[in-house]
Image (tube, rainbow, N blue to C red; front, side):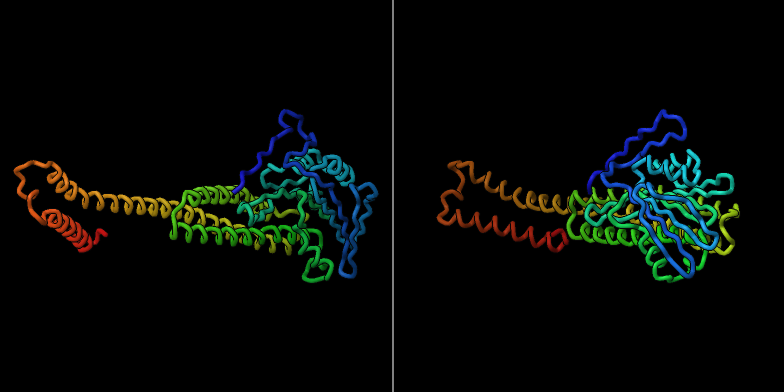
Length: 356
């Protein structure tokens, strides 16, 4: 597995609300998409960095502003001016190290931030993407890190084809749909991790290697990272439902309870996987110990076999004149026969004792 890149926090020591991007270096330009829809129609526009954007909300439509790329603070600042966002909200949007949380600002905007997880099959690592959402009266603003694949594509397709309930409900249901999509993807990542664990178990049982132990520790690190990212999300959704947010209707609150149940299920599965990883470590150490025991057993048997042979060879290698065996005509062959008989006898004895 590749080594994870460290993210340097460059906003340490700055005043609260300072807009500084904290995350991996990105070479792409931010893409901004504006979507408006209701039951009858659906429209979407692309605004390069919001240069031509004007806010004009109709009460009979739901609006979705999707910011694909948070590495340009000036774009986030423009969004903040258009939608009157709090400086602390914009700071959290730009900080990819921010933990999952939600905040209400003047009961007019609900800010939510948490993480999207994706499994990289080439590096066998879990990649974390920082997501932020703002729910307002009739609109949702989403912020995601720049990626080759748009993680919200399934929701976009449902809106285009008018499939499901998304276009029939308001902005709070759109927020639920996006959150539910992210949580459902956790199960996909768990399936990939489970397959990786099964492969490691097969490798350990077939042939113990130092690489297997390295991969087990890497897998343990990935599971710890996933739990660290997902665990606060359960508490966040629970508090969000319990507080009865004014921007979230009772109907959508029921769906959020379902998301809460899914997050709980993911955490329970993660805990079981962490126990399985500990079992893999024990299995790996046990296999290594068994292999070492087998090697030591073979070396011990060889040593035991050659000890009497060395004794016999040492005696007849002294060449004393009064040794009668030295003058036997077939003495050399007798010694070879005795030595071979000793070897065969010891091998038979070891086999009877299941030592070989």
